[in-house]
Image 1 (spheres, one colour):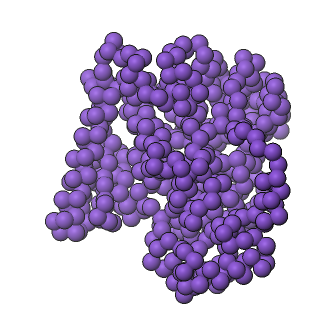
Image 2 (cartoon, rainbow, N blue to C red; image 1 turned 60 degrees about the vertical axis):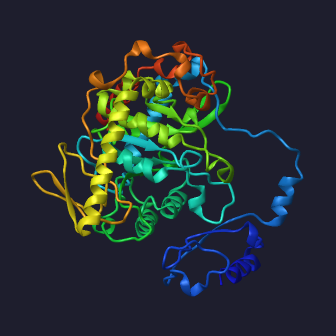
Image 3 (tube, one colour; image 1 turned 30 degrees about the horizontal axis):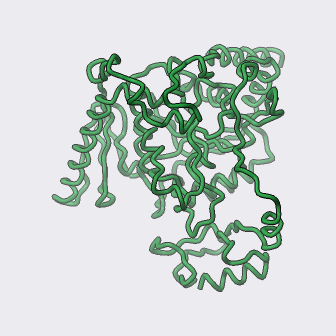
Length: 462
C-alpha cells in the first residue's frame, strides 16, 4: 500500500509520512491516491521517477522555534524612478542579450491571429506551499474553465520564475499538459541544456497527439519560459530583483507584441520592463481555506474575452482598471453568456441524440474548444469534434460590436464597481484617480523599439 511506500520513504529521507507530498503517483482509473491505495492500482512503469516534497521534523522544529512574523509578500509598489527602469540603457542591453540567447520551447503550434496570454504559476494559478493530499487541491478554482475559454482567443504561454524541472512537474500533475509530454520535454531539455542556445526544444507534434487520460484536451499550452529567460534589474530601494521582459517573446515570435499581449502575475515587479502589458492578479494562498470563495479567474476571463473582441491595441488599455472595463461592457458580456449557454445545450443535445461525432460550423477562423487534440479542420472551416464526455461544452468565438452592446458610460458609477480594485491593487475601491496607476507612465512600444534597435546594432557589429 501507499502507506508502506511512505514509511520506506521516511527511512530514506527522515521526512514523516504526514509531511510528504509525492508527485508522480496516479492510479489506473484516475482515482485519488490515498494511504490505503495498493501499489498494484498505481501506474508505475519501469524507470518511473517520483518527486518528494517535504521537510524533516528537525527543520520544521527550527522554523517553529523562531518568532512569529507577519506574512510577507515579495512585492512592492513602484516608485517614480522605478517606472523608468525599462528605458535604462543597461537594462535594454540585458534584454537584447537575453533575446539572442533565447531557446524556443514550444508545446504546440502557434495559431494565426491569436493574441498572447502569459501566465505565472506559483500563487497565480497554483498554491505551491500549502500541504494537500492531491496537487489538484492546490489548483486555483475554475482553472480549467479559465484556460479553456481563454484558448479561444489566445495562445497561452507559461512563464515561471523557477526551473524547467519544477514547471513541468507542476503542469503535468495539474493536467495542464500531458504527463508523457512533460517527461519528453524534460528529457529533451536535459539533453540540450548544455548545447548551443540556437537549439529548438519544441516537442514533436506526434508526441503532442498521443493520448493521456489525465490531460484536459480543451486547450493547449503553446510556450514555456523559465527563470533562465529572466533578467536582473536594480530597483531604487529594494535592490536587485529578477523580472520577466516580454520583449524576449516579442523579438523571437514577431506575431506578438505590446499590442496583443497580456501577462498575469501576482508579483507586480515582474512586468517592470513592460508595465502596460501586465495585470497583477490577487495571490492565491491557503488553498484549503480559500478554495470555496476564490473566483478571481472567473472574473478575469470576462475581461480577457471582452478585450479580445473589442480591442485591436492593448496598449490603449489600463489593466489596473480591468474590473471597470468589465462593468462598462456588462451588456455585451451578458450576450456572450447567453450565446455560450446555447452552444452548451446544442452540444448536449447532439450527444444525447446519437453519441456520435458532430460538426460545429464556425463563422471565424478559430477552432472550437472541445477536444482540441482530436479535432480536424477542412478548407470550409468546419470543425469535426468527437464527443468526449457528458459535460462537453463548445464555445464559439463571437464577434459582437462593443458600440451596440456596451452600456452607456454615463450610467457607470463608482458605487457599482466590484471589489477587484481593492483586492488586486490594495487600493480603496472608491479611488478612481488614474494618476495613481503607473502602467500608463511608460510607452511600452517605445521600449520595445529600443530593444529591437539594440539587437540590430549588435548584429551589425558581429
